[in-house]
Amino acid sequence: MDHGATTRVQEHIGDPLSESPPLDRDDLEEIFADIQGDLRYDHELNGCLNCGICTATCPAAHYYDFSPREIVQLLWTENLEGIYDAMQEKIWACAQCYTCAARCPFGNSPGGLVMLMREVAIKHSMDSAKNVLRPFSRVMLKLISTGNQLAPDMINPDHFADWGPNISKIDAPLKLLRKAIPMPTLNTTATAWEVNLKTSVELYTIWEMTGVLDQLEGIDENLFDVITDIMDEKREDWEDFLDEQEDEDDDED
Ligand code: SF4
Ligand code: SF4
Image (cartoon, rainbow, N blue to C red; front, side, top):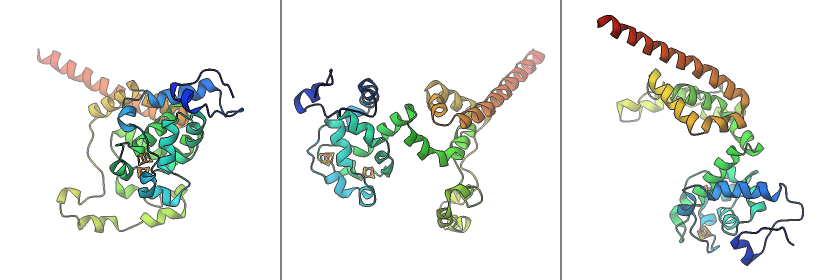
């Protein structure tokens, strides 16, 4: 079959694109270019023997229709349609444990490559990314609007009823268990750390300037609107604080 332009790899192994690909070739190429264009790509993919050691040691492969060997082969052979297909479900099975990276004789990091594919799935607002991230909207709201992480005691059946019956599995006596941790600073489940207004606004600006918020808008527009409203107010508060400081300095002069 001839689909016009092919990559250098495809000239040697043939173009595996079907007669009716799920997207136009240009779109498939754009997705692959985004994965391949990441700085980490060349560090994490050095070749592939197709030996399967990564899959043999992968915990996710034991439980899901998922194989890091297959993911690496799709990328190595530049199988554009297969890459797109894997991004619709399979890449979300990886537990990001990086056992594969420790074992691969080629020094590949299949888990790292999966991470790149996930980031590109988010960038392209794929439905798979929307579905996977939907239950974490409150986590993202807290993280982006406060600069703080979710405190362990917030993960309970009352706050996460939509997680279904499995939430009861983490309904453990966290405060008691935390007291068993030797270091006193870790004896709390209340919060992670205090983030002041200036730091919160700076973190938000970083996420804004690096395109994270654009990606969030593509994944969950409502969440984006809520976060934008909260952070606009915080920015105003920070500007007011700076103005007050300036007035005080002027009075002293
Ligand atoms: S990624 Fe590494 S471990 Fe996995 S099949 Fe390829 S060469 Fe083998
Ligand atoms: S990082 Fe992902 S692909 Fe690698 S072993 Fe862990 S679960 Fe498997």
